[in-house]
Image 1 (cartoon, rainbow, N blue to C red):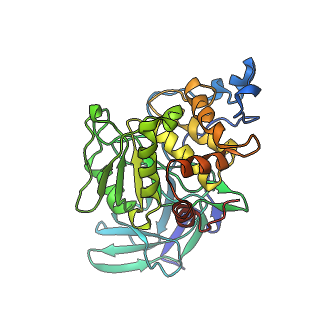
Image 2: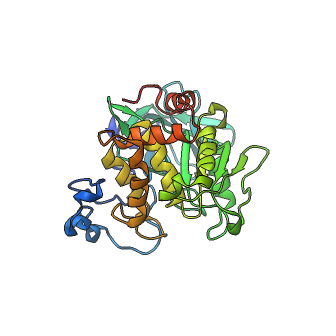
Image 3: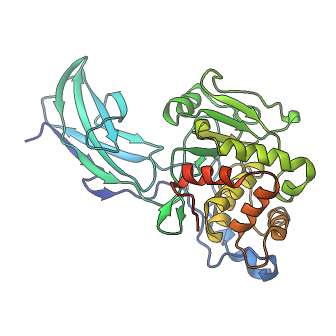
Length: 356
């Protein structure tokens, strides 16, 4: 009999969705404002969203539990190891757990993991469990818990044509880290040590007192103030957006965190453009934008004048038949982002240069 019996997640099981609150499913996506009707506002069933106090853009943890079949000892602690490979070459290690259970957040979605438990008494290994496997639910988005800030999510995990997905763990979006909210020391640790952020792309203007919050010996801080939505085509905006996508085209800049104030409007515009370039479909583009309504910053609707101004600004870059992804590609070319830079972005974030 094994001296440490793993209990959950059960072997070869799939977890529940890792979002504590999920956006209501829509019956039909509408990007063309000419298709809107008075009832279009019901497409996302606003009243179906559970109303609670506080932040709703939070991940749901995966609960781990095991049973120690040995004689109990008050000096026993446990190490929980979670890995993407059976050799546990680069595992997540949660040490010195006093009780035989632990909840874990920030796992990647749609990912197969292996786990085991080690019982210790100081530095002496007392017992090692078997290795079990489980798979996390693939539903998007991958919300992240970073203490002190909000609206933190992985740009990866979204499904693309050809049964591909945007790679996780490379580029993230969030609220600001100082000002209206303030990241904690634990939050800094999550960003630098767990998510390995190496570039902090700050989209705030000078009136918002932008400054580097993360250790600049580890994380490069780049301040590129922008205006969102339809302002992407303004003369003084074009160079700013070119600079942003130049950062995205540099493999050495990853993993990247970009943010504005709340991560909804300026951050939402950058996320829309990047996701469209990578080939995300219309339904997902709308859904990702409106997910910011789960934050503390208030409702964001694709029917709003602001969002529609972004779509209108992109229309001249198509021929009436192009999808929004092609419009974004042509827009980026017009502001000086080269085809080679876009290919680098696609290669790094999807593994392929052809997004069609």
